Length: 386
Image (cartoon, rainbow, N blue to C red; front, top):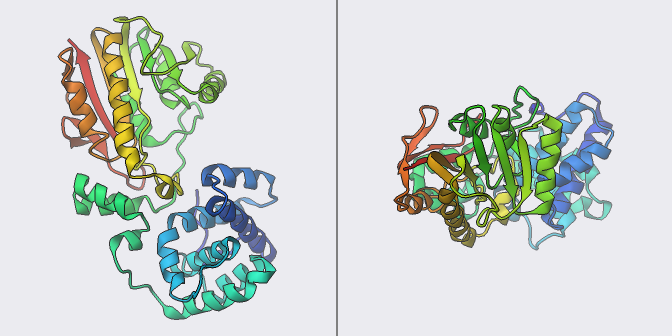
């Protein structure tokens, strides 16, 4: 996604800017007050809109940026508010402050256009507060969680697990725009997921089980190597998405099964490879899921780690002797990476394999990718069945 110019002015003129801002404001209200997911609500709104590519990019920047920076923007705004504003006014204020504080949009343009996009009854408030924000200059942030705009628990957890410097660098990286990566077959898949597939030793004719396969990026990539892939997902709706992607990519050697990976209806001792790309807290993919940081609860980490351990417990028995077990998660917490891997390594049927080479970084007895301009955060561990 290309970033709009710093003035935030799309090529089609003032009216189109207002339309882009109104679309962004509507989506922000739906996300903030209605519980919608930004990466679902925004594409649906853009599909119905008559905006050119530059305006679409600008609307996307406003929605994703204001959502990511919610805590930081509220800290700036609350200095000039005597009471909590209604949701539409709050969304307009965040959108305007994002342009002033983060994009460097000239104050007169950001204030005027945001006021025009706001509901009429809130325009006086939005105008007054945004002018105060513009006059205040650069913020003097009170702490790292506010500056980076994350809940305290995410910053504290990753600082404990990765070291403070690495954690802050990773979190700052995930405040940038997501990059779009397409495989040669046209499927959109982030580079870190592609590197997971590259780290799996699969030959033509191998039998592979992908126990948490939806939406199907890794399963279809393995099938493209002429492996026979059994792709499982416990949710029927997600299994339907798997099947749709299988058909779209012509993955004839892939079969979709709606099944719980903790109790897979598969023959024991038959598989050359089992992949467990497990459900996780997703703290390595917050760039492309801008509202996830505000939805994830601290208790989710331990709950998901328990699920991950159960999935690995069921996987070893599926492998033939010499078969490989691969565990990957798009998160950065020690509990879901090192802790789960340590649990799996207690199984005397499994022997750890060395981590893959760069760009992977050593992480315990496995490997990790920290978020940067091109990569989401990802952890990977591999074993052989003895």
